[in-house]
Image (tube, rainbow over all chains, first blue to last red):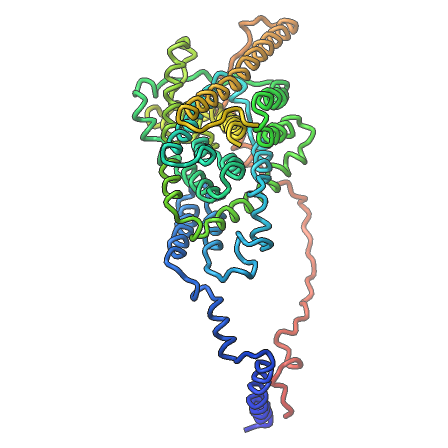
Length: 410
Length: 113
């Protein structure tokens, strides 16, 4: 045995003698024993506070993450929300400012953007800076398809009332039919904050499920002949038209529905930054850095707000059922309205009713679904550009509808 | 800011009818304005063409398929262009950096022998 090993053994013996004595001395002064401290530690662990409902929610979070990564279904939303669900469902002892509903906790501070409703307008700023309204400007009557799809909001509003929700809660639930996550969060934060977690999760889940929900409804309501309709290619839109659109759009829609000002004001402002051509730096920040930051914070905190004890309720299940209903109705009303419009249009101006489904504002997924359904019947009939018109009109329409509900019910 | 006091299903129906009508009116106003702007814009471009000495029927309307074909061709061409390089070759002497990761001087087991 060499000198170094002897040194180590000596130090270990001294520590073995000194440490418990020190610990016990400290515990004695605080009137605690080591065992009591250990028991306190155990009581605060997630294992001690565990209940089966947390496991269910953790399972839901994992499914969201799986769908985002493996199926590529809205990964930018499902992954932050899915991970947020995991974060929000770790069992803990209240009182240590950990949970999202505890005043002053980090998560609670981040959640304030959702509760006070300032995340959604910033998301809209980014969406405005990303969106090209050319398809809409070149064929303005497609905007009416975006309006028709909002029927889903108001029918769900009635349905929710019939299922026992109060009018304000019904309004917040109805907006799921607008297929617009930020709008749903904005309205529910004002009308029914206690239901916001369920409403946001339902809205984002069904937006991710657009490729699954919409095709059966579209196929049920259209004939093969209608699906084969070829639309005139959109004309070139001048720069003047692109610049004037956000200005007129903002003035007109917000004069009609001032409550939608935070959403529509930011949407059209973002679009003006893009189209003006002289504020490229600002547009770049809005469409990349800003929207990415807000999406991370919004997704994570909305996910974390689904704490099992507050989320797993009968009302949440009802909201999920109503959400599915609203998406079906919104899709059907868009398609049917396109068919009605065709009755009044000349043969060369007819609209392919498949693009009516894009009136639900899940941008750009519902437009992509219209394109895919069109290609299944005719491989050369590209509907994407045409479908983008009602798709972005749906964003405007759902924001106007949210403003109307807010002014009627708040 | 309440427009309606909603307490019965009848009120809800009325509220819904008003709501969807307002959405339609808002977007219909936009349609009317932009149909008007569209006509003005087309007329202005026709006038410009006539001023430039071209007749209306000479204006070539490019179909969507042509636009797609041109866009794809441009995309492929622009992506196939190699990065521009300086074409200057240099041989830079790279000194072996000192790293103490295996140095025996700093070893724990630096026994006297």
